[in-house]
Amino acid sequence: MKILIIYATRTGVSKKCAQMLSEGLDSDAMNVELFDIEDAPPSPEEYDVCVIGGSIRMGALNKKLKKYLKEHAEALNAMQTALFLCCGLSESVDDYITLQIPKNIIPSLEIHYFGGEVKPDNAKGLDKLILKAMRSSIKEVDFEDPDPNDDPLPEIIPENISRLADRIRGLL
Image 1 (cartoon, rainbow, N blue to C red):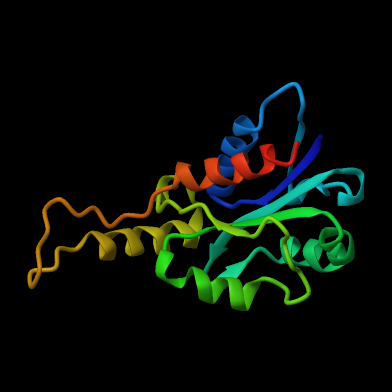
Image 2 (tube, rainbow, N blue to C red; image 1 turned 90 degrees about the vertical axis):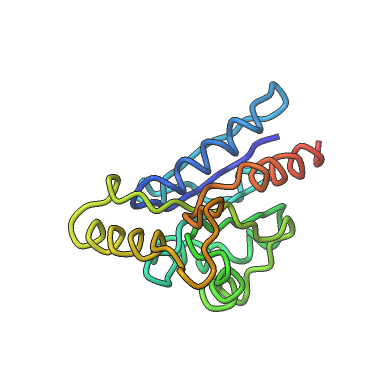
């Protein structure tokens, strides 16, 4: 089975998730190819399965990724397709799906949330400042309802990545 995984990344979170998915699909029966959207990925028609995803940055999905989805909508809808999103605000995932995924894309393998990370060290310039501010606001203690065991910083969710890998392996 030939699998295409395309991701858009700015600080490396989506790339990390795409690599984890690729590693979860590593077998003799599967030929997995990873492409950053910046590297002009091939058309999905040459593949049996296509997985496309990226991080939500400032409330939006990468423009090149959205363009790829729109340009290849017919082919993607005619094959086994999954989408994934990475973001730090899990409570907003449904809104991001509604607002950022082109309406004519209907992924047969669904849309998956892979979690996210807020790591300013991986960012540059204004992004770094925004992430630092976001991280410090997340880490503030709620004095009304303190919970010393609660770490609200977003994390990648390996179980969600494994769940998609299992679903794809099930197509064999």
